[in-house]
Structures are given as structure tokens and as C-alpha cells.
Image (cartoon, helix red, strand yellow):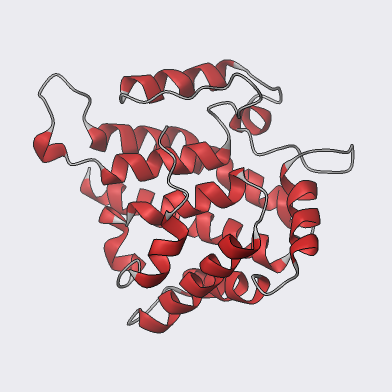
Length: 226
């Protein structure tokens, strides 16, 4: 899957756009890409600062925001001011599963099937390939059902223009619905609830809240259109 590590910075200067409640059907792909990146990679000062600014500008520039979006963005903006070591410690505890007390890492298979690399992992990989993408999980890379990769895949689907699609190619609307309806809305709420028990750092609490809010809103809008 493509690397979009510059998106957090570009989102800051070229903001996401108006009210996400009104744009959920065509939500900016960068929202998913930035969220995915933050769950996949250890925090770096420049990146966190950029995401914090983005969150603040989104709040300031949107005419109105649903309460769950506003609260999540506020937490991200506040949490982004923490020192790098605090953020790295929080990231490791929340997302790497390095101790028995830590929550399981954000793999859908762990929260759906209770095991790593299950049938769910295989199904997700097949879905990526069906839509024309693949994930290289060799050499220590994350498996395809990692939350960050599922969010980034949504970003890729949102960015694709069905108007130029060959009739034999997969319909991106169907792919979006499949990932949202059959996967993310099925396991992300449970994962979000599990991490709340850890009293996560404000920065990551906000990112998790925003991911859940965006996925839920996007799914609701697509359901209304079907």
C-alpha cells in the first residue's frame, strides 16, 4: 500500500474541509491516511506537532462539528503538546502489546477471533487484493488487519475515482461498504472500549475517538445511500 507520510503536514496547510457530518460520504482521504499513520508508527515530534495543528485548524475552520468530532479533535490538540518520551511510552503500551497487562495490539483478528493471523486476516488480505492493493507483511511489517492499515486502505478507496474505473475493475463503493460494514464497525467499537480501560494518553485517546467517530459517521452515510 502506498506510503503517505507527508499527508499530516499537508492537511495542516490544506485543511480537511467543512463539517464532517456533511462530508462523511466523500470524506477527505487524508483523514484516514493520517489516522492510520499515527496508529502504525512511533510518534515523532514533527509529525505529532503537525497533527495537533491540523486538529486545531479543523475545529476553528469548520462551521459546525458533531460533539464527538469536536471533543476528539480537542483531545488531539491538547495531547500533542506532550513531550516525545511520554508519547512514545504511551504508544508502546497501547499499541505494541509488550506486556501481559497491555491490551492486545490493534489487529482485527485478535478482537474478532481471539487469535493472531486468523481467517479474518486472510479475508482482509483477499479484500485488499480484490480492490487492487496488497500488503507486504514480511520482514516485520504489520499484517493486513492492523487498524492503521485498514484505515489507510479506506483512504486509498476514498481517493480513487470510480469515474475512470474500467468496467472489469472492482467498484470502490462496494469495497468501502465491505470494509466499513463487515469489518471496522464490527470490531473498532470493542477495541475502542478496551483501550478506554487503560486511561490512554490524551493524544491517543483523541485519535481513537476520532477514528471511531469518522468510521461510524461514514458508515451511517453510506447505509443511507444503499
